[in-house]
Amino acid sequence: MIPWQLVAELFPPRPQFKAVQTVIMRNLKASAAAWVGGVALLCFAATVALVAAEIDGARLNAAAEEKASWILPGRDYANQRFSPLDQITPANVKRTVPKWIYQTGIAATFQTTPLVADGVMFITTPFVALDAKSGRELWRYEHKRTPGYKLCCGPANRGAALGDDRVFVATVDARLVALESTSGKVLWDIPLVEPGDENAHGKSEDRSSSLGSDDERLKANIQGQTGVGSAAAPLVVGDLVIAGVNGVGYGLHLDGDRPGSPLGTVVGFSGRFGRPGFIAAFNVKTGKRVWQFDTTQAGWEGQYVTATPDGVPLNRDIAAEKASASKFSNAWRYGGGSSWPTPAYDPALGLIYIGVGNPSPQASGETRPGDNLYTVSLVALDVQTGKHVWHYQLVPHDVWGYDVASPPVLFDAIVDGKSVPAVGHASKLGWFYTLDRRNGQLLFKSEPFVPQQNMFARATPEGVLIAPGVGGGVNWSPTSFDAKTGVAFIAAMHMPSIYKTGAIPATGGKPAVEFATIEPANVPRWGVLAAIDVAKTGKIVWQRKTADPLIGGVLATAGGLVFTGEGNDFTASDAKSGELLWSFNCGAGVNAPPIAFDIDGRQYVAVAAGGSQIWGFRQGDAVIVFGLPD
Image (cartoon, one colour):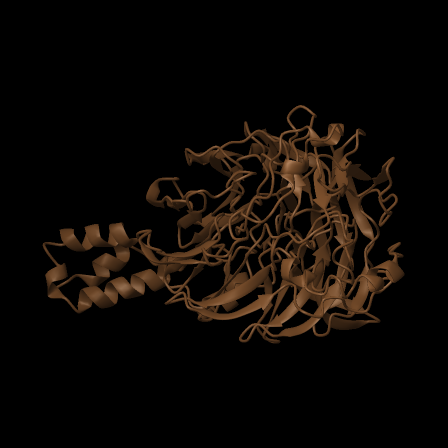
């Protein structure tokens, strides 16, 4: 007879393992062979304790209610990235210490958002499962990139998705892979872009052969077009896994000349370069494509608007654009529109909210007349069909690189005393936009949280300084939102750019080539950590200037803290005042979003310290987990 009462006493229920324990007990009761003097049972229970319980649709829908785990890239479908854990507070945060460190062995632009389910942590690049309490490796999957793929800026994978006993990862060479969550075994591996696509892997026509000019801007090391890839974490909704592609907005990228800062000049040549971006849904069991939404489509010319939807003049030459429309009627086929952030999802409305990047070619708009829908937009799609429901285009006919890069956030806004379901976006433009998520109507936007100068100015031969520059505002860094206060916490930067025109003279029978460049301005740069009331007023609650531009993301907690990376330091600030309370030097750039989780009643905070090649922060390979001393 198996002593079930003894088993229960030796292995008391733990909330995060409840589903696993139920399976264990059911299986053991069904098989008398499981009992061998009590030993086999105990060993089996100890072995499976670090298997994540089933993550189905109901559990994903209720992710916000799980205090211990972090099972979605944004913690919940709303992408609020707010942890209800409150053990670490302003009063004791100075006692916080590293609990364990895991090194991947790949020191290159490590930007993962860890996921934690039932004591198991999942990270990407490489793809690894860890014991979240000790950092012990459970399994590891090394993805082999497509031969000949051009990689300019490091692996830059930002996380995985969980569901159906699988781990889903989208890769830098535009593949979507499903791994068995218990072993890392590959269940299926499909291309997001067909290998025969001439623009799939950096093979699109470029103008690097034209760079024999005496123009000093064109003498730097050319990083070039990276090819199509996927950096954002996928999203699992029901039996669908949703992923998009990036790298489709053509532009030559030249190394910068500032020490430790490769983010340099973007060169835009008018012409037919790139391809349409897209976001697509796949069956979780088979990988079969269910639907696809192309981010540039026929009819992308739109209404030829003269201002942004919120009324800021765009300084466009509408007459010239309309005159060239027939000549470039198929420009949408090369239109760009990368998918940078993980979508947000509203189960009640059945909508996902995606952000779309800049049109192609970058910096130069002569060969793509019109508004260039749906680039630089927030777009709402029907989650089951991928059909367009509404869009809000922040910058029609963008030539400044103002992608919608930071993940959308869902929350309830208060307008005229009434609660309105809202979607928000911390933009590259330096404003936080709050929209009605049912129809895309702008409710209000925030006060500017970074300096703004000459926005939407046209390029000149002498160059015009624009702020925010091509980096933003807020770049891809996720926002954290506190639903109790209505405050969003954002990581931003002040990095102005110079926008210029230029030309390569006709030589050797070759025609003259005109181009535009967006290059770093030789002015001081810094970061901004800001708290903004995005649910009611759009007012800045507080902001703190930081020595380094902020890139990577924010975590706010119920303990009253805001965690983020500042250069090589991981920091904690007071959520009420912004006062810096604690910092830890991680030895590499902290350019990834932090998370929080709980094991056995103890709160932990985890972050990747892996730097970034494109932002010039020291690269590394460590996931560091922090907590209070034992």
